Image 1 (cartoon, rainbow over the protein chains, first blue to last red):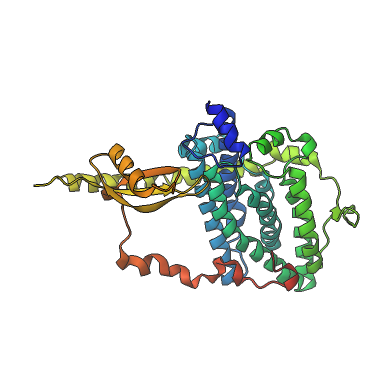
Image 2: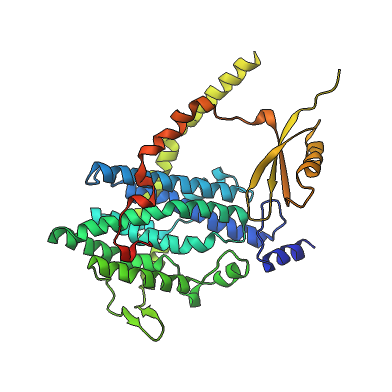
Length: 308
Length: 94
């Protein structure tokens, strides 16, 4: 009965809400995906946060501060959506801190130059938007609603990034070269953000059947390349892919094969950056403990006073 | 003297996929009864698929006098909006 009702809702493209019965696999897949998404938002604050003090103008500092603040907010929207499935936030954070749940490996690439901040906004947020717009129609109501808010806020992130790239590409030869280096660094990682190829993506079929995912990894990847190549041309920059060519017959760009071995290494969390990211996150959590204690003590004191 | 029941705020989910929205309030001695009253008052014409009732005195609301302090600081941060970034027409749909 329960299963039949759930299946009928999915079949009719209706939304599942928190108090509906749902299969354990559906619940677990959602907790995993939403938590990983939430973790990515708050870990994503780090590579950009590092640049706030070094951003080249007061305006750029203000923009970057607002963007990092948005990422924190997106994390909180998503933790809330995950909690509606019955897993408390404290447990999700524990899983992040103990590396038993992942965040997007895109945040384990270094950001050595200012142009990286432009490339992240343009490419990484651009790829994220490509991923996230279909998630607004996810079959799980609270996740879809969180994504609507996030997508609305994400647009400025991509535009500010592209505008940084535009300024640099219209600047001195050194600035143009820096913009090209950033594109060289971020192009392939952005392409790989859509996940493994469909032929090697074990969860895609099930997620599509459940209406959690609406497009396959390869479909979204193609959309991203098609949208992004003309944007690079306008900047006078060249994506680092010799196989990249317009295919008039398909009406799409053909492009080369990403380095999936590198992708696997990044997903496994190799290198030094993952430890730095988790270390910073844990320190932020631990060092914030006195704030939580103070807030609880204040609330307790006020309660005691009003009871007296 | 007549009995005065506590007040409950009623939230209705119009259909799956939408947030519960505030619809109004009812008076009832307990949550169960409040739910039934809310069902009769706000969803006689299939206006919803789910109801929440919350004790009105449990709602903590912002003070209208604080509206400036709370919300105005956002006014001078135009850079939070996508429209504050001028891009060439070819990519402006971004």
